[in-house]
Length: 385
Image 1 (cartoon, rainbow, N blue to C red):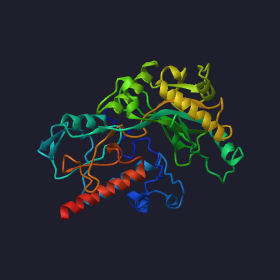
Image 2: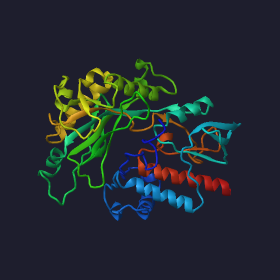
Image 3: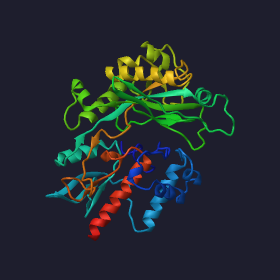
Image 4: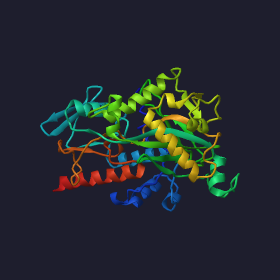
């Protein structure tokens, strides 16, 4: 329970593979983030690639080197130090309390937990520090043989040794709601990503060489707040409660292990259970089922129609050789921690600085890194004013 493997050192934890692509150019200088990564061990290719990538086998070592740099400059990193409470005085946090009873006094608190630290959201709510539900995205992860994607994109299979494993990016509109591919992992693996007992969550990653026989991608749809009341999810934790309810429902449909429910792609679209499944990279294993029975109805309908549109856009995308695996639910934080646009501080607690994905202000490594830089600058400016 304390491993925090989805939001620990290395970006999104053990499985973060360092996809360095963002559309958040207004946040700051992307080059500064890329330069820092290169300085700490990333290949210089990321400075010029259109879709730079590091790899799950490389990124943790780079982050560890960054930690060493922080420590050389006087910073301290405290592992095994879970924050369980806050000591407040009016509109300021005076100290954070750790599980072992230690209290760390603070002038400023940067809250950069990542999008799955549900205990911190509950802690803020307990102290009546304002947070709010936000839309997020939820869906499935689809896995093709990499050769099918290569054939579709390069018109040759096997691909030339000089070509990288090919990828794709697809979008669709269903009933005015978006369906889109997310976190595409060419030559990658599907991995378990639950953060609590009794949940099934899947994610994707690629090693630096991207040489797996499989290509996988999240395919998700936007979940709006007005869609959640029918599922008994309302108020501040509406999105988080819905996210948890789906993950636990997927787990309860199985055998109590991390085996994930799956369906052949053509069966998913036609609405019939698969008799068997294709080979998969997912190590805990898959079991065949009818995902229509365990996904929320509106999510299933939207994904099914979105995949039909994907199949019309990309040759051979719709195939019996692809598996649909549930559930991809950690695309972004289901909670937002509002802050002042100019000061970056929380609207209510003047020395609390919500930051990155967990605060609802980023959606990937680059955008989170730039958000962190902006928060650091804001604090420095306040100290010097």
